[in-house]
Image (cartoon, rainbow, N blue to C red; front, top):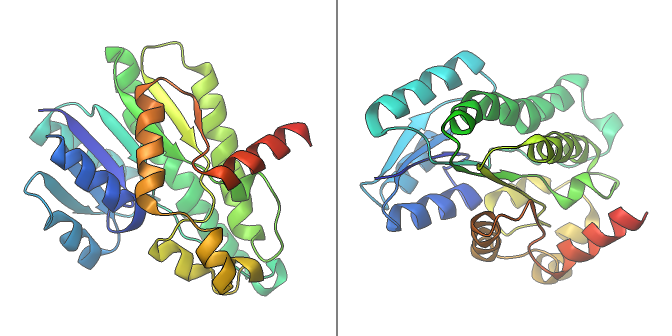
Length: 240
């Protein structure tokens, strides 16, 4: 049995990935601070194993990864989904709030990647899906703190993938807005995103994003832009 480790597995993209991989026969370890959400995800399959962890705590991440490996074997698939997405004008955020967004979205990714991926590279096998965002490619007012954290995600993950010389397949996903509970955090975000029109036509379904990410990593693609809007933003960022 193969083993997957997913951060942000209590809801949204992480939950969809967990259910999909459990159906494929993986032992799936999901990490999140949302204990109720973890239990709900885990109730979908006996192959899903919840761990209530804060990914910003490096020591706890390292301890959890060791526990997962001892219980289920080496991590074959790593998926980083953990994030928060508050909106608002930058000067309406406190410095502490902005730092917390960066800690969860960026430092949390770094903690997990630096803990898990070296062992994959040493074995010369494995698959990694890292979630950046189109918000880190195109600056948007009222999304400054979140966009800055996702720009850091994009930069780190893009170079991590470029530097990889092993057979570990890594994909950076640039989703647009996705119809998950994360979107509800952005009530003070860009007005278009929170309009009925934006929610209907700009936000995409999580299942389609997960399906695109899975196809991309299995085909060895280094980047994935799920949906027409994501592809347009990706092209615009490269030509700007």
